[in-house]
Image (cartoon, rainbow, N blue to C red; front, side):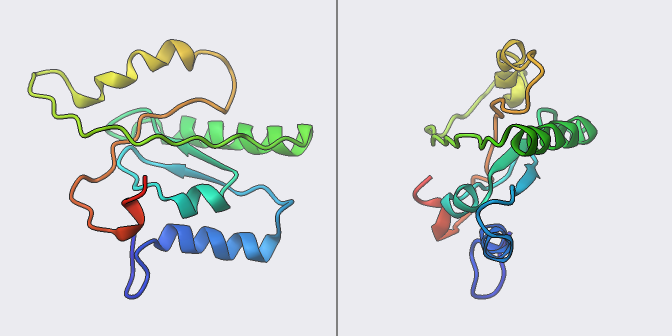
Length: 134
């Protein structure tokens, strides 16, 4: 998401929220499978939870995972460690869905915890300068 004069609107919003609530209040958000995640978003959010299905049939479950993460942060006074890794562009030319990569993650995701990996496919045509470092 962007606006005139701001190439990272989500990151800017998270930064404004963080400056308003301070470092001790957890900030949690949900992202769909084609989110363009920026360093700024990772810096100002405590937890970003990604959808696992396309089409977005798991919005309720994604919200549950986000709420579980928020609850865990409040009750146990913990903060997740954020890790992001940019992978080379992958082009799939087969009848299989590009989202088949998430199948292998399901066994890892079987444990009842909020802090699980998500396979995010950013929009490949984005020209945002904030995405260059990710």
